[in-house]
Amino acid sequence: MLTHTTRYRYDRPVFLGPQTIRLRPSGTARTPVRSYALRVDPVASKQSWHQDGFGNHVAEVVFAERVTHFDITVRLEADLTPRNPFDFTLAPAARRWTPPVVFATTLGEESAPAQHQQQAMQQQQQPCAIAGSQQAETDLPACPHQFYTPEEQAKLALYRATPLAGPHLHAFLTDWVEKAPRDTLDMLVALNRALAARIGYQLRLEPGVWSPEETLARGVGSCRDSAWLMIALLRHLGFAARFVSGYLIQSSQTAEGEEALTCDLHAWAEAFLPGAGWVGFDTTSGLLTAQGHLPLAATPAPEQAAPVTGLLDQCKATFDVSMQTDRLVMPDSV
Image (cartoon, rainbow, N blue to C red):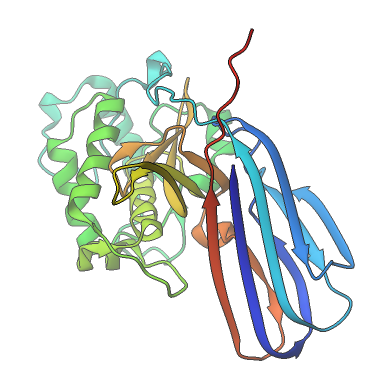
């Protein structure tokens, strides 16, 4: 059982614009959610639920009067029965990936299979986004198409848009393409572990997400920074990828050696793999997501997954967050 409370306090009565709350687990989450409740205080004059354009459950709340505080409380019960994060099968065509030629500077054509050479010709006709090119600095389609069908390419277009690669990102990709395994799953697992080893974790309370270039240059970042870096790498390698914000529930030990559950808001990356669907990669731990990862919002970009967004009058505001987790022992079934 998780109880998550967010409290905002304002130094004077203020008008709040419509507030968007993204704190409800997705219906497609692999971790079963047995119950869920959202409470807002003061009581909103209007509260409604809908699905956004990315399939996330979103609550919209509106206040008619000025308020001096805004509290959001989530209570949910989740089944944390262990599951195998590798319990999926890739489609045969997706079991090997093709390195983009723009980064494969050391790969000779003689060693590339004929199908890779054909895709390379297609890539030359539709180049990737590289810093310093004459193309406009806007999102461009990722390349190569990898193993996605035309229908999948259309549906996944927003998750394949690729920002420009700066010098640090380009150097990382060039080095990675040379040494990465060609088995798709082996490559993705290795890339996730490589990022976890290279980017040190840093708790950042200030808003915003660093660019992939800045995160690589600093060598440290929050979970949202390293997740966004992973997404940029995946898209440049030809994969559809999205940003996920959610809860991370873990077991830990107290000073007395007793087991305790902890929960934090967390961020990770997901790649779409034919045959498996969306597969999560936690760049902080270097592991695939499992039963403790409970997604709340999955979007093409981080700013679209913020837990709470909305407008308010100019004021001095403070907020605090608390989470309480309790283990419920279910009776044995008869």
